[in-house]
Image (cartoon, rainbow, N blue to C red):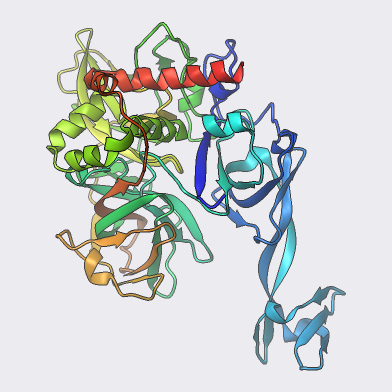
Length: 549
């Protein structure tokens, strides 16, 4: 195929539908391998493990799936000290062909495998076999030479029970579509770049441009510099006008998060809820009580009920406490991306015209619609037996979980308990952890570190475009665009922990080209509260019905 096609494939347990399942987790069990897909030749290009490790197989030697394990050879760079070398063989041109070490190891070396040869050591690349259990896989990029037409049209393929997502690549290219696949951020950990998260998710029109605060837990200094990579790995145009680093030194025994308003919060006494239920009153406490592999991924579909999905949490409230910090670790689902792409396609040949109208709409109207459809993670508190709206968590994106925080006023709560409801559309969020911290914020030292340099993949200096919040944007127009950003490391305060957070601001445009004449009356129905939630359920029911035919 000449045209690049990509389908995000949701692997929440609901795809392996069972009426006996009330909640779905990321426990690794009941694995079904991709090798079982009849008539398909599957080549694995990249793997993101649940540990955060990123593995890429050479294009000429892609990974394969054997039973419940991904296997293949990956390139690895190794250093061999001269003092440990027994013998070196060279070809007629004097190039190294093999190395025998004193412990008996032989390295067969091609011309292109020698990276550096100096007096004290030789650095070469070798191929090393890896074996990755599917239970340790978070994300896979798969090249499929032949795909079942039904599965390709539905965008749903089952790899494993509750594992995560497969990205299917056809025609040699990747073409990511969806709502929340915004710029990807990679933090340099001293050896490699870790995929850390996405920024300003959901800001799909200029009026929705917003600030974002992304924690970078694996970022490590190298030669007194922090290195961060920002990439466009989606079918989008991404506009970023600010990328500064917040380096926060805070008291030992505390953690730090920054909320969407830019307020800094210290966390020193996180408390899990004493009860946790979904909206069907099913117990889900073990799914959200700890930061672990268990997640609450949604309730079983009920086609006769149009309510949103969500969870209700009950916390013990300390005496005389007037405010609390609600902390979550969560991410959006790939199902949300898929459904939003389906929604965009409903506009057919007027899609570009509709996008132009949206780009000039009042921001408050756009946010109000998004909230009414259950796209953000909405927070309510119970007062006098009634749910009262508090705030909402912004869209995070589907690739990695994000730790986030909101401050909640509990001064007029008369009970010794605080009851919270988190509400969202059907299968739109995956929630790993929820807690409250009732401790007061402590003093911190916050360094606002401006970007020192930003060099894109074409060696263009774009530093000035990311230096401050203004009307000058660094624009990533195409898939594969990337920029390496450098920041100076400030001196750390005494007796303190350090947290680094990327403060960015921007928006992005989703590129699609749907065809056909739209059903205007049906599109008008999406003005109704919760219609997009209904649409999500309808699409999933369609999938089940089509798979049964």
